[in-house]
Length: 576
Image (cartoon, rainbow, N blue to C red):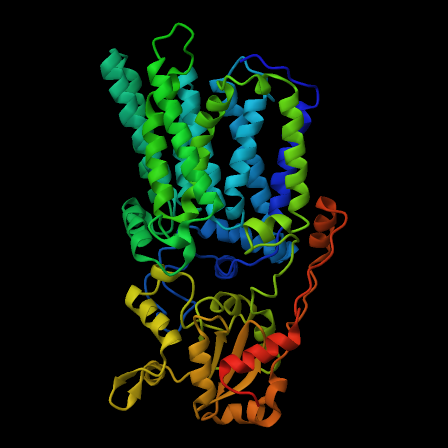
């Protein structure tokens, strides 16, 4: 469609990039990030990638295939130079890379269209909005970037038969050392190769081209063996895919069959699928038209489209993968809408208003409060999500020995209390810990007093293997039963609590007696409940906070402290 493109259209494109970067300016709430940074630091310090578990005392020495080691090294390097708060800058570079690749894909599919056409900008805005909930600075960002890169390479090869397709080999090698979703790249290459051969056979193309592409894809598959675990990675994607079904310990791995999967982002993902599917059928229906210009969308792309939508249904965190693949067909869909409004400059004005409102909603936290309450604006450490205060209590009071820590708190403790601290259970999940062990711990959080034998509770059974010197446990509703149990247990003394965590000391150990006498609940009562400590963000992080929103004010913790304290002691079973 012919549209009137105002001169400020290119500024809308750069404003979209600015909004994408603003989404990256958020406080750290991801517990996974800490063990990933700790792993990167371990690799830097020891100059080798660990092949067995070195971070837990329960499964120390067990085999560990850590695919994302390179990304972890990069994250650790950034954390050591600038502070962990600045790791989100890596996510910013990734988003800029994806936007760049989208511009290249647009040029291939729409060579005569305006570079800042309204349909391109709308598709970009839709993509950014839907994937915003996964802008988190974790290693998966590498897989998002590489997915977009592969998509570009396939379209570029179909249009130009370019030697650039050889880039699949080094990119697959890089992917196999950056993130465990490297199998996605392998599947994309196989789909592209198979559909390319089908097209050759149907249209009697040159077999030499097919053989050349086959060689490149085979080499890219073999490239995954260039990693610290060598040939083990060839079949490792099957194990990872199996984990998606077995690992149901975090909401992000929920499939569409579970209520945790559903949010505004997953609903929009499904709507995007039906819009794209309709458009693909429409393209097939019109493929014999003289004006038809999207033949390269009719080979591998529909198969890839269906495969990635299936992937997005299997796990909430996989939605961005489908949105990357969905981008081309969404752009074509908007382009061919027969709406006069989209042909006028008014559409750009309306989009500008929407983008301005979206931008303002991010640093003011209106966006997060309304749509994504797990996050908030501002580079820094989210004290309400990370056990910084509890970790500082352990460090300042020199508490030593084996710690029973819940699986959410353990990763941060592993990083903050390094190098001595080792975890009981952490968020490496099935990469290290058997599913039965994890399941048993979830039962332990809920029912520690259940009898496993006539005179032995579930907690006693766990303690019989490791006589925990202390316990750091979340005050979350799903774990509060364990806190109540320990508070009444004569072998443990509550010595610290805040709105996030409780700390109990084993009072049968001589080394704990002095601290129990000074800080124990029996000695000082409710004074053990403390406000969350405030940790100031690094200067560079604060500068970025103000660059993207000059009116930024730091979010304060400890709101309604007295009320939270009263609720805690009511929940734990004492009003002392």
